[in-house]
Image (tube, rainbow, N blue to C red; front, side):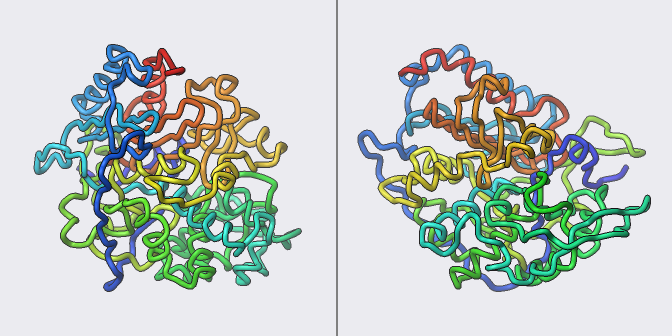
Length: 461
């Protein structure tokens, strides 16, 4: 039996929501816990619960979603799961299913900690926008103003059959800050090795660098995939954003996030590591079992990640990956989503101005790129669906064949986590599982949307 991470399905489907947390360091401050605020009348901070009917849902129809998620666990597709649905700032449902670990058999609690991988990206984007509001950078600034190491970047033109780059050219212009926040700058990622640039990202171990500066230095040695602004490719650009946050703020990236996002939002269990005391609350992560190069339909606990040993999240990482290094809980992430839904404020604490949230919720992919590039298997871009600043955004939900409302913001993580923020229907949803490489069936985020909105019969409530 081979027990190894099975990622071929994920790469084929385009589920490349991941950032590695592979090299570990020894001494970084743990996030300080924050006290929970007392519920307030009329508060939009998830401190109160409500019945489905009070906010427009039909309980019988909503049970279809509960039954579906329970069956996903019963069928062995995932070990356990948590889901949270809220409307008008009140929790409609907060459900747990299955186990934290098949080995221990512990029932899934509501405060379980999950690897959120690329759901780290919107949090990094908010950190960037905090500095944007301070006048530290502008959307159309060249990234070389803040990362001069990129001044001599080349652009790949040709490669041979073995995937070795044989011809490069100069950049026509440097990527802009807008482009590094929308994956149109041309950087690679290294999650797969089909593209010659991604192959170099793997060879140079960009994502397992010993710190953000080393990550930048390694990135500066690799050509861009294309001329900036001419295409879309999922990339390490959000890790670059983490470096920029660190540089412009003068503080370690994790410290900036703690002081300006996690602490103010009372996200007490969110950070780049758990610390030793909370480590037992980290859910086990699973992959498809593979025997003789074929999936068996069962899941086994992962023992490696892209050929690297699974990281020890009880210790601080050597590189704080803004693209995929964070862990969080369902309620912590729901509080972040509610802040976005509230246009930048939660529980009386303002993180961003409403206009900054609106900027993040506006497609920034140029029209010619939008209609000619389908993005990934999850992000099928077209004139109805685009990408804003570190979020996928829906411009016209019905034209896109989606049930959610216009202006919905979303993304997901490599271990199957997902969320969306729907300002049209004043609704948020967070789903947490821990299975790499797809869930062995229907995409859970898509199913959750369908089963949520079929139950929202009175959106006017």
